[in-house]
Image (tube, rainbow, N blue to C red; front, side):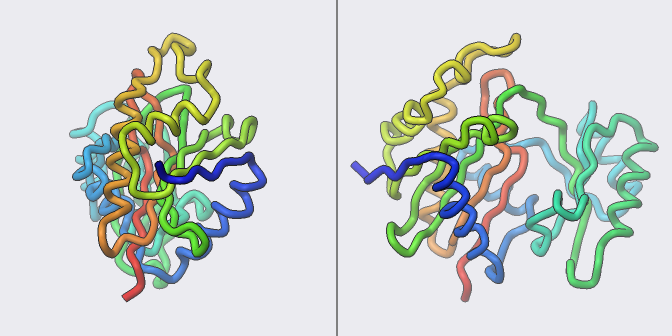
Length: 239
């Protein structure tokens, strides 16, 4: 069985975040491209549409229906939230149009080719983070942790070296040690642990694909008991 490496928030901050910094300079896919790739491995992703103008974003929002998020999207935009390139909870054509115009105006020459990503709002009280990281000491590893405010409160992350089996993925879920959070919560059903394990297995399979250096799903929102990748980043190896 692959070796496990587990600890609390100190490990996460010192090792996992350091691996994220190492991604800089490599070929990242856009969020839209990243999630399309993840979907081919059976990972459920949010419903998204790409638009190249404010009016096209309005049309996309109408087609998706309900409340949407609008983000500036491009391969060079791995850290959209830090630059405030995300607008959430938009539920009117005027709101979508205004947000889209604002985001397009914030694009810089360094951002390269950009578009607008219109996504359904995925609501859920529980968030996870998952990914594949490559370390010099251990090689490629699958990661699962708590996301959102839960990450700040608990700070737990578990790892398995690749390749993994479905049983390994189930063990990772158990090893998080948060069974109460996987049970029915605030009117939401229990987390479908088989679906979560399948998501992790698909992520691991994607991480074993030649040319992929790292993958980050943050957040992985639990909606009606099912895991949904709301944001994703795939980083390709340097040529």
